[in-house]
Image (cartoon, rainbow, N blue to C red; front, side, top):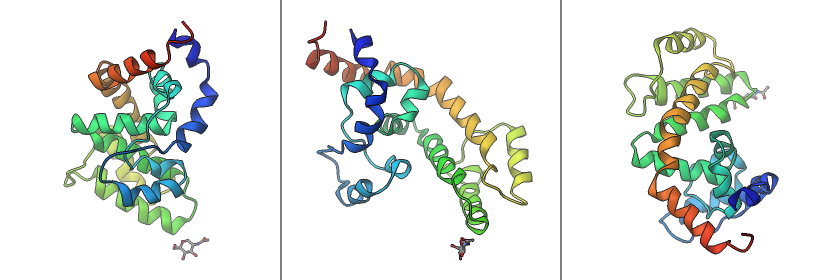
Amino acid sequence: MPAVRCLGIMMCLLPCSLTVRNEDRDERNRRASYDFKADGDADFEESPKPTAEEICLWGQSFDKLMNCPSGRSAFRQFLRTEFSEENMLFWLACEEFRKEANKSVIEEKARIIYEDYISILSPKEVSLDSRVREVINRNMLEPTSHTFDDAQLQIYTLMQRDSYPRFMNSPVYKNLLKTVSETQSVES
Ligand SMILES: *[C@@H]1O[C@H](CO)[C@@H](O)[C@H](O)[C@H]1NC(C)=O
């Protein structure tokens, strides 16, 4: 049963970021940077081939999917097909942003994130309610690393409620699961 394999939660995180086995796509030069970057930015690249454990974990919860670099990457590709990739891009940008400590860098990056994902003029504008927009507009007067916290959570929740169930039911995910159970049916 998949449940048995899913126990290896800790196994997920390391192999996940280390297996870079993408064999296709025109991403070769960007892949170079993939190899050297830590976690976060790696998601901006095409997905490495996920392991059976990882694929299994993705189905357990949205949190587990999002904690796994290859999961975020596969989910992001799915979002692209739904034309809502900006949600993931925004969330990832916020993850990076929250780690920033330098005040002048924070101010600069806050402006970039605002222009890219909050501004109604941006083609990548994310869908936020008016309360969160007001919070951000207030925060932007003096940005801190927490400026987008509410917005990031709102977009996370949106992806969790909206796109994640569709991803779980998508042919892409079902085929991955099928491959896993076919190649790893030793335990059952
Ligand atoms: C903050 O970043 C700016 C721009 O990159 C840099 O010039 C400055 O030295 C940094 N300040 C600190 C305290 O690291």
